[in-house]
Length: 277
Ligand code: NAP
Image (tube, rainbow, N blue to C red; front, side):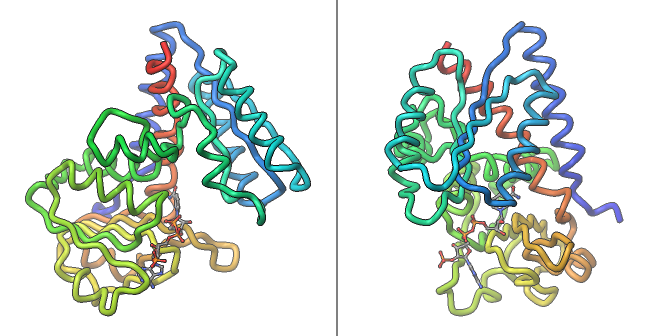
């Protein structure tokens, strides 16, 4: 099918650009990832990030604590990394085990090293349209739309999901591109009423097959952020098989937004390095 958005290809192009830039400027930024506990999915995500960093020439530091560590010791480690000039990006792998205050911990990160874009200053600057570090998955979605030359200024965009990590930053990024937005969430009464009017439908809800063919406008661009496990297989939030017959462009899962997230993390590490130097 030629209506499939190739996130893998675009993400590899970004990685190549990052690698070339680091080589040309002869710089080696460093990303430190803090992990607490043994969440299996987190281990896979960290492994992918490490490989992507090392492939392009970013130094990767993996700091792993077991889940009996105190919140104060995690915060001390963040403070140490904040003060270490050889470290340019700090990321706390989420979710943290039960009992840890994610907001409190993340907000210890120096905003200039906050490559996940989740600290208060970065969230505020995004809303105010100031230059800042922006969460990687929303950035990845915007990069995909840009790569496929979707002019958002003329589009009705429907966003399903309003999380701090994905939906809310996307609202700001889409508004910045003059999109006309409708936002749905778990309390929305009739999401079909909104999704069927959308020229661009972006779904980040975490529910397999939430979006079926009858909920999508003919010719819509469909971006599926969801990553769900069904048995041993990964799937998104969109019924890909059926919706792809109706969409003009659609992201697969895997191979859509996922690889873009990691590539945008690399871009953020480079941006953090430049902000600090
Ligand atoms: P989240 O924090 O659980 O947020 C889910 C959002 O979807 C919430 O705003 C929720 O509404 C809304 N929602 C849930 N069920 C809904 C329904 N039936 N109808 C309409 N809205 C509904 O999840 P997240 O962190 O944003 O992640 C969303 C999905 O994207 C997950 O599958 C996650 O694995 C995936 N993800 C992928 C990447 C990637 O790299 N591709 C990165 C991050 C996340 P309320 O606000 O009312 O609760």
